[in-house]
Image (tube, rainbow, N blue to C red):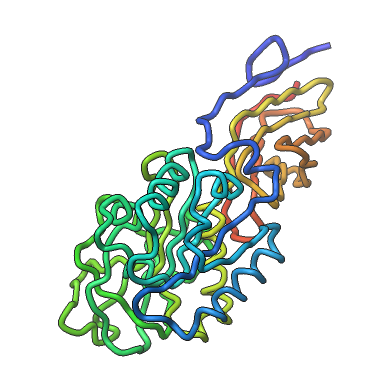
Length: 333
């Protein structure tokens, strides 16, 4: 009997892959999100619709959502209950020094932040927060339709967006360009609308993410209008950003074990950051079948014809469309 896997006589190969930033708990537990909507400056009429949208998205996608305008929620003990905090249409100075310290420690321990629209019109005197959110608001023209250029579709908040996305909102100009401190997901095409005297030119970031001081941060400038929160594309964008902040980053394959014995291929793949998750095994020109997924491990077996074959394992987040895949050449004798 011949046993052969990827040119190894032992019959199996364990492939170590880079570790994901999020934890096993993020892949397998129900995340909890704190939505914070305190304002000490301008107050958006869209706040009730925004809260309702996040609650609906949470209920449909396995997220527990709490909402508050009480800054006393920002204690180390209370924040420890959450995976991410969403500054949803906040404005002005919303936290005192003690609360700021608790939030800094929360991020430092690996917590996440999602900022929506006027989160950049918040806490101008707190330099740490300025770094977290990425940029501060400068001014804006009137609400109008503009073209958003989605420049990175690998992130869960942009994976299902069109490359050219036309929508109406209140388009912010920022006091400085956050690039290169952040990973830009989308920019504004200023030729598609009237940006006003604060125009940023050909590079006008409007959504981004970055790792920050031990945690994660995501921001979108969209979300001024009530109508935004019933827009399916904007809701996908918002959900993906919140999921990223909560540590539910795109699927990550971290190890793969493949074996072939008597023409039967068996595989076991370990993965992280995929909740919910779907996966499949494909052997080019031969078969495609679903993986069995449970507790961060996917398994599959299949009978193959003799010869050299390419085996591809793909994991997919069905909510955002984000994927991770790995392929290997094997020889079946």
